[in-house]
Amino acid sequence: MNLEMIEAGWVSLLPPLIAITLALISKEVYSSLFLGILTGMCVYCFSTGGNVLQAVTYVFDMIAVKIGENGYMIIFLVLLGSLVVVVTRSGGSDAYGQWAGKRIKSKVRAKLATAFLGLLIFVDDGFNCLTVGTVMRPITDKCRISREKLAYLLDSTAAPICIIAPISSWAVAVASEVEEAGGLHAFMRTIPYNLYAILTIVMVFFLSITDFDFGPMKKAEEAGPREGMDIKREEETVKKGTVPDLVAPILTLIVCSILGMAYVGGYFEGRSFTEAIGENPTAGLTLGTFAGLVVAMLLYIPRRLMSLREFMAGVIDGIKTMIPALMILILAWALGGVCREMIGTGLFVSNFVTAADLSLSFLPAIVFAVAAFLSFSMGTAWGTFGILLPIVSMICVGTEGAAVLIPALGATLAGSVYGDHCSPISDTTILASTGAQCEHLRHVETQLPYATLVAAVCFVGYLAAGFTRNPWITIVVSVLLLFLAFGVMIHLDKRKK
Image (cartoon, rainbow, N blue to C red; front, side):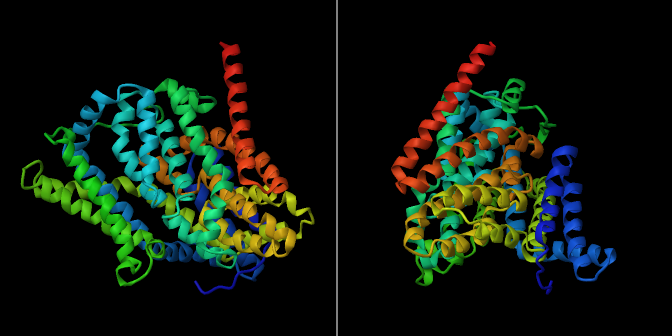
């Protein structure tokens, strides 16, 4: 689409707000997203002298463009869905579940194992959610951990570890946005100020160890793993697979994905590893997933765990399982495209921040709140920090601004991840639901209070960061506040009992 962006002002906020509000009220995300896209296109067309028919045409133009731009992501997801199904039907997942079930016999251990595995796969957040979900879902089901809690564990160890890991697709993306501030070195300096990522990981381990829950998540945990899900056990899964039949394809996927990202990005042609993996991570993930499928085929067919016909039937069925997630993703991409590329939602919010005449000491807290709102509205952390990081860098030009630059950049990243976590149109949130096989809006509903508690503590932490300009004081204050909040909630919970 070769259309010039317009500045629609406050009206540019309507498409994401309509989509999110309708999704939360109706519990039906497909029509909500479509109506949000249509609203954005109507805003554009009516502002440029067009009509409703033109707006409808532009809706499908945008969807087609986003399918093309995200082709590798779509291929990666359908291949991964296929790998999950064939591994499950080989009996590898059942064998792993029986093996791990003898060693992981409590909810606490199952949650900790999920969290640790999530932190180990720090290269890409979507890859993290789907891989960890595939491996840990049989274990968490057996330990009576709800799918909503599993989705929370996936979501809360995916983006948070990627945004503070120096070797990840996120790190390279951020570094490219802050070249003038020091590139990767500047990113490294933001890590102690990325309070949302740090506190979310702290909260994951606290909740896992104490087995404490509150809000909708508590009800989900009491109901068990089948709440809100129509889980069907297929007869094809009853095979004589072994633990290596699960581990070998997954390990191949992980190793070959990292090598694939390095290869696609030009690492073997002289580029640095960090630059290479950030060049086109989804292309590398696609190569890695394909390698995992090939290894699975070589493992299963010669040993007659399944015939070639059964293997290919599993591939096709795996593609089918990804269609709901792909539909949501495609519509979410289109909505984000309308907001960013056509009606200037991000530009409106960023101009509002620039026009606010406040002390720079308040900047980290303000930027955190604005980034959270923008990311929530557009459903993209990457799009949000892509818009705000250059603006924050420009605002912080000068002697006083330089001192608050790094805390403000950290706050931008943190707010972007928080909004992305809470948004029902975020691709990471969608993939966490998919990895856990949890109803998407149930995941959003149960995760929201947890994420918002951490965000509230972060806001206070960024006030401290703006005035002290010291990362360690900021972290200590924020962690103490978080545990104080835990203490109050646990006390209130005991009083209710």
